[in-house]
Length: 338
Ligand SMILES: [Fe+2]
Image (tube, rainbow, N blue to C red; front, side, top):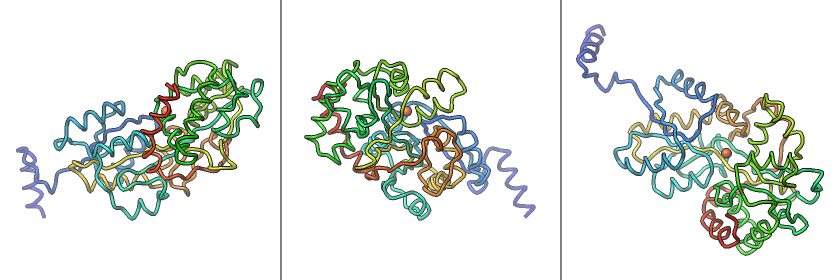
């Protein structure tokens, strides 16, 4: 025992650490960064002894970097948001298939693919100003194309992944032809040309510039949970709808992760994905951005999410969503939804 320890320390001293004593590492490329992330990664290292190195950048930059690095990439895991972006990475062949009984047991089937796995969900919801629009006019995504809403609808750009994923869900449920009619009706109802992000649409509804808007749930939850009085005031001025509760359920999207094809630390990578599906990590991961855990039994303690309550989820598999994103883009282009 002693001999081995001495030999090991000698090897380390001359810079020749044997593989057996080399600390395990995991390299993560992440397009997500929230306050709770430090605890998320720190606890993994505490539990497993595996050190995490992180590179954080925008999704497109990370994907470009992975393509350039190719087989020499040090990255083990890619974390990003939106099924369409995860699908893009998958289409480029960046992920390796993962087989894990833990993931299969913890993550519902509609939130998994053979390669990437969703770890939290967000809903695309409808928000309206009750002085300008009646609740019964805006209960479904389809309603937003009703000519009665002319001059009242606001959204961010049609080429943004959030709207493309919603378009893809509508194609899957209603068909391409109806979705194109819907997109044309939506564009005809715009209060203004698409501009800004989802928060800008919510604030414009609060200010009465728009009667109704589509936005991701966490932007609204963020305003509700904000310490700034003007944010809370805006959230209170806006009414909230879970769309399509009597039909398909509300369209959701995800934050997810996958093991990379050229990952040099595949064992550690699978361990990390399984860790993300643990209750503790689910709470950090989801709560960091006011999202819902992908694992249905995990409970978060988030005042805004609690206030919003529960809803019927559209359980369309993420794989079907990503299959129709390109068609959604073509349809939106033809409809002038830019
Ligand atoms: Fe977002």
